[in-house]
Image (cartoon, rainbow, N blue to C red; front, side, top):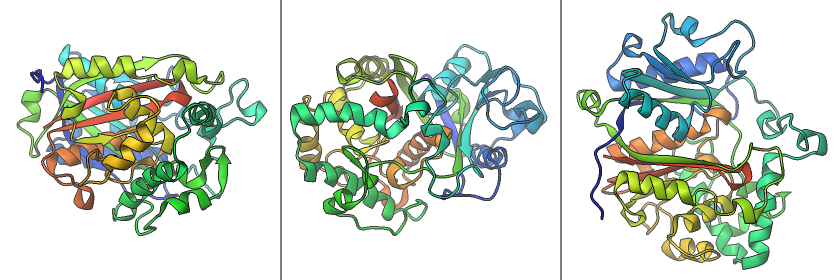
Length: 386
């Protein structure tokens, strides 16, 4: 292990609402619920918060909820600092950490989620943005990632049953998690994955993430202040992002984005002062089965083309060599649209606290968290430590 660096900032509280296929409320209301839960967990009140990272509705911000909503009005107070460019998951956490570290604010609420927007068996609207060469030509997020995965499978020919075993293991983690949307829906076997309908070759339905509703939030502040909060803080040790091109516009190419994240990973680990082999739990952005494999290879835990065999042989369960997506991930726990990346951070904090229930890994000191991936043509990563 390298010398661990001083933390940049810390996560002092987490909040997680009920996750479900649909919830009879609004996105604003469920985000407020998650915020209240995170504040209570941190032993704070809204008066303590002077920064917010959230999709900002209204003029000058990202479209969130039509009308006159804005977070200052919702919470009845102004803020010193706001982030609405990518206010979720790793980018939201790193932006908030930078704001706290440079004195722009003292306590940041990072919150996201959705409710009352999904219905029936329709494709979620955010998987088909109104971009040129996307909606007009019938493209969707699954197909963007499939374009990359097809090249990989053609070049390296990994064993399909072993690839399906990875999906089955993540889904079984969710089946065992009473809070997961897919709780009790297993156990899944590799054959179940390939028996499910084909969505975008090579991805079957059970290779893909969910589209669900719910919200999640976390509170970021200085390490010193977090140390005075009721629960043990999760320290932000390092993080980084990598952006190749605007997401879901031009078709992605494997030779351009097949290794996206390598530079971000290198900077993240250098900042944290640890090595990939020091990571105890991996909370990876599992928008599909193959993207998990790609991230492990990009991280350097195995060579390109060897990820499927590596993960199959090491195992990805809580008692195995490479524990991955311990709550069931986006494939089985939940994927709340624009708030989905926050779920990875919340589960990472739960692992470090030792409160992750049936998905708890023993003796967790470092958790690696990622967001987005090759088909989106950008990627990000963060290391949290206890």
